[in-house]
Length: 433
Image 1 (tube, helix red, strand yellow):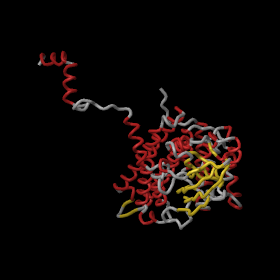
Image 2 (cartoon, rainbow, N blue to C red):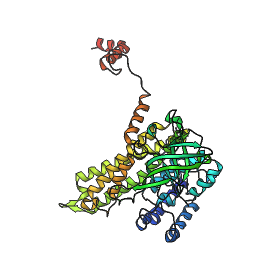
Image 3 (tube, rainbow, N blue to C red):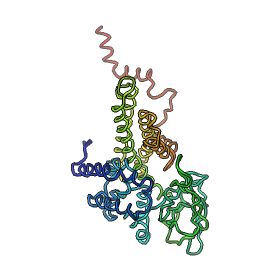
Image 4 (cartoon, one colour):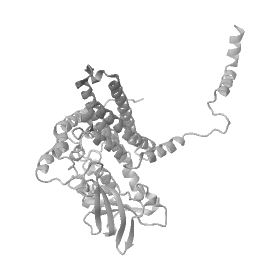
C-alpha cells in the first residue's frame, strides 16, 4: 500500500528554487512587459529574458513535459502539476520555462504525428522558444463542435486548398504557423473526415480579419483571431498525421492541455487566497481587523477548502495519467477537473476582490482579470456544460438500473432481509426478555 503526500527531496529542491525564481525574477516581467509574452523576443527584452531561460535550462526545468529526445526531462504529469502550480502565478513564467500554451500541446502533437521534415521546420524552433504557434480549430457558427465545421481542404494536384473561417484562434497575430483543423472528406462522419494541416501564417490567403480581445481590452488588440482562409494553397507535405486523423490528434492534444490549465490555475487561485489573507490581517473597520469578522473568516475558510479539494483532485488525476499512460482511461476525471476549474478560480478571486473593497475592482489589483480568466476557462477547450455531460455519461457506465418497483436501497425490504438473516439471534433476544 503506497499512499504518500510528500515529494522526493531532490525534486522538492528544484520546486523551491522555481518558487523563489518565479517570485524574484519572473513575476516582475508581468509588470515590466505586460501582455507581450507571445511576442518575438528582441532588443532589451531578449537581453533580459534569455539569461533567465538559460538558468531554467541549467536547472533541468526547461520544457519538462517533453522527453529527453526533444530536449526535456520527460517528467510525468504529477511532477508537472507541482511545477505548474508555481508557474501559474505569472503570465511570463511558462514562456521562461518553455511550457506555454498553446505551444505545449502543438509541440506534443507534432512530436507524436509529425514527419521528420515537419519536426525540423516547426517543432525544433518551437521547443527552442524562437517562435510561437496557433491552434486554429473553432468556427464562428459551430464553436467547438467538430460535427458542424465547414472549413475544408480540397486536393488539387499535389496541393491542398483550404477555404473557410476560424474563430478564437489564439495567438495567431504573433504565431509563425497555424495548425488548422478542416474537413477533407464530407461524405463520412466528422470523426473520420477531418484532417490537420501545418500552415505558415504568411501563406497567401491567410487573412486575420480581426483580433478579438477580452472585455476591457482595446479593439483589435486581443489575442483571439478571426481568420479567413481564402484559397490557401499548401503542399501535401503540410498534412499532419494521416488524412482523416484530425479528431484523434485533437483528443491527444486537448487531454493534456486541459489538465495543464488546471495545474496553473492552482497557482493563480493560491495567489488570490494569499492576497485575501494579507488584506484581512492588514485592514481594520468598525473597531476590529477584517480577519476578526466572521463573514471574512467564512470567505477564507471556504476558499481554503475549495482550493485544497481542487488541488488534490488535480494531483490525483495527474497521478492517474502517469499510472495508465492513457488519456482515454482518465477521461472522466480530466473532464471533472475541467468542470471544477473555472468555479474555483472565480469564487476565490471574487472573495479576494470583495475583501479588498473598492480597490479590488480597479486595474491596480488583478482580481477582475482573474474573474475574466475564469470565464474564459469555462469555455476554452470545450464548454463546462459539455464536460459535465461527459462526466455524467462516464459515471453512469458503472451503474445498472433496477427492474423492481422499489429502489435497491428501499429500507422496508432491506429491513425484512436483515431480520431473516439474523432471525435466530433476534428470536433468542426476544426469548430472553
